[in-house]
Image 1 (tube, rainbow, N blue to C red):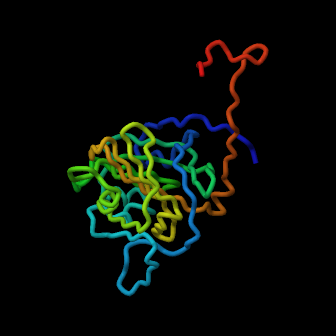
Image 2: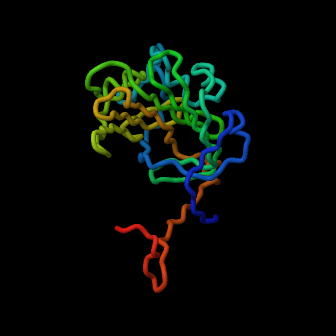
Length: 247
């Protein structure tokens, strides 16, 4: 299998439908982390008479934009709920999983941000992998006052029994995260992980991210891209080049 270096992600300016059929540029997603759990149960909203493991996440459909209608869907089905995208999409030719280590594989990736016709969120970002929605981010959460992770999840119709890992990746930023084993979130038989964040208690800068992190299928495994670490450039005699940044 060839070893390649992935260049920086480049944006493609084209309508969403055209992005799926055009030649896409290489790139990679930013690191998000995650460890798949061992539960192989089915997810989604509870149905009458359906037996559930009480430790699994619960997905409710009594919210303006149900996750079950946004994830695992074709673009036309997503856009039936969100409308036409107001701007251009971003595309590349690779996707990533953390199952449990970071793995890049070849796929047609498109990210598109939509206005929220329901007026609940500031905007909604959807990522598509090979023409199927694999991530949804709700940007800008309603309400007033300090945001808790429980409220952030309720706003998008999620209940996760386990407490999140909490950290502050930057000044004033609170990030709550549930990797596969903690989220125990299954939609359409696929595993997802979850992140929620807020900047300085500003709800307009809060977000809930639900991200596909299912183990790769055999077809995806056949397209794994082995990433070659970049080597630092050197000048004569092994010294850093004159334009190298100082450390």
